[in-house]
Length: 112
Image (cartoon, rainbow, N blue to C red; front, side, top):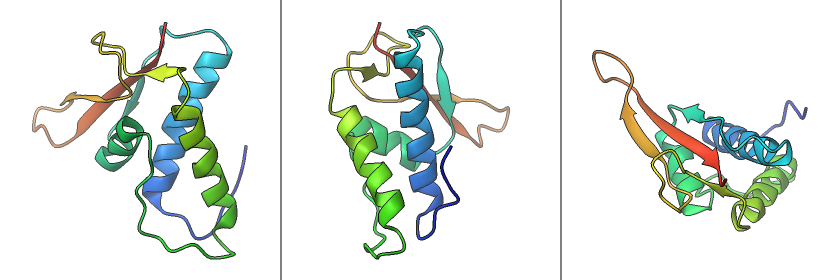
């Protein structure tokens, strides 16, 4: 548990949540559990293994930037993948989740 952290963004928090969940599932040996997100930005950052934030570094946001750097480092290792469709990448598979197709959900899993 960390926080609250200052100077970050909602996208940074969504990105950290996905990566944290992937790392935790890897740690406990549960690659069969799927993680869902409706954040297109966070899904893109996970897929690209890089948080492309436009927030300028400041002393106030140093703690969240350190967490983002650790998450990016973890994604650079061979642990996590979006494997619900068997694709050996860190990408997200988006699909409609509501009748209006308002939201897109990405599925992430730890590599088995």
